[in-house]
Image (cartoon, rainbow, N blue to C red; front, side, top):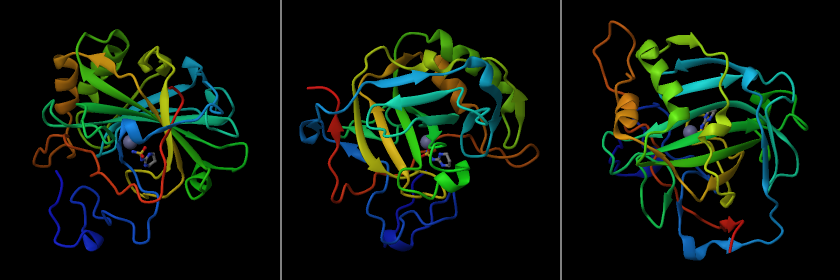
Length: 261
Ligand SMILES: NS(=O)(=O)N=C1NCCCN1
Ligand SMILES: [Zn+2]
């Protein structure tokens, strides 16, 4: 659901009851990635990803999305390289999706929406003592974005889909003790990267975004499973969890770099 405010500066987004735009924000997310305006940067390294499936803790419905959280008390599931100066620890991953397949992603490519988008959220534990502190710093977070497109059944995703009925309502959680999120990444190493923000509160401008060029394929039943989740708690009037994406934000004075030509 997106609001149609008269003045975007004081709009409250129905989902978060917080400002839709951050006053004075200069690096907000998500954005449209105009492929032809992105600049190939030969200095960008390949992104190195090493996740330990045993660091997986639980899967839960937080009333905005569903997320899988990881034990981030040590450097066991990390990413390094790419545009990053330090290594970053995996804290959680979650998704954004639409009510129908025509939209649902947060970022767009040449103004095209995908039906859903995966976010793998990492934080700079080399420099900052806690995730909460990293959230407030320009180089505190790194989020890998992966587009989902309608296509073949995704075996790895099915493990998550099978758990969703147990977390239908807001604030429900189940144990989820072995899952390797690497299975959700496309094989192609190509990515775009830009300096942005969190797309849900606190919306802080602390994210180095790494958006994979190649989407992963999931089937209709798997997308429908996302849409059976609820924003609402057990006992409340049911509201389906759909359209949990933030509207596009102005690019302002930013360049999107690509790791590929
Ligand atoms: N959609 S997002 O940019 O990842 N937003 C987040 N907000 C809270 C912490 C985790 N991520
Ligand atoms: Zn997200």
